[in-house]
Length: 176
Image 1: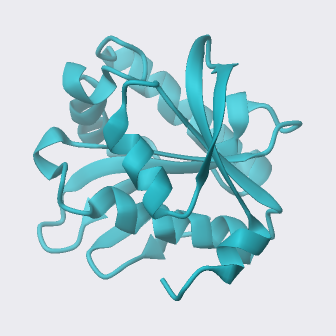
Image 2: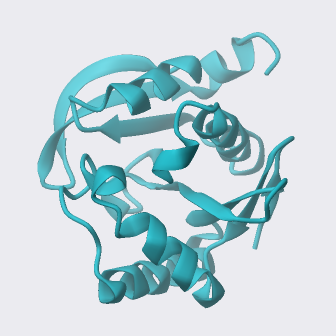
């Protein structure tokens, strides 16, 4: 399983040892407001971990627990997965971070690293991202990544703003 690093972050494939930090993240209503609209229970987070472990075993990619190198703390989670968790769909990138780590560039830094993994390692032809239409923070990260808005589409049982970038567009961008 692939561990990724950036200047400030370490991304580890999600495992059982991340339960406490992920539950702290996923049980924050502000973090989950645009994802599920409600905080996760401990059982929800356990189920997430089981899904992630199964995807890592099946696909060789899924969700990472994101650690801040300077503190060693779990501050977020990010993923390369298939849209709507179905392998017939294109690759999707996603993330969530603790509220006290918002507006510090961590999401953009992790997203660049994960997108690089999707295009360089997985040789993906395209990468999509979805967010609640009111989630302007995530939309800005998508735009910083070079993604282009393609419209509102139904994913994950809600209408989502969908952003996309092709491998060609990724490689044509200025150095990251």
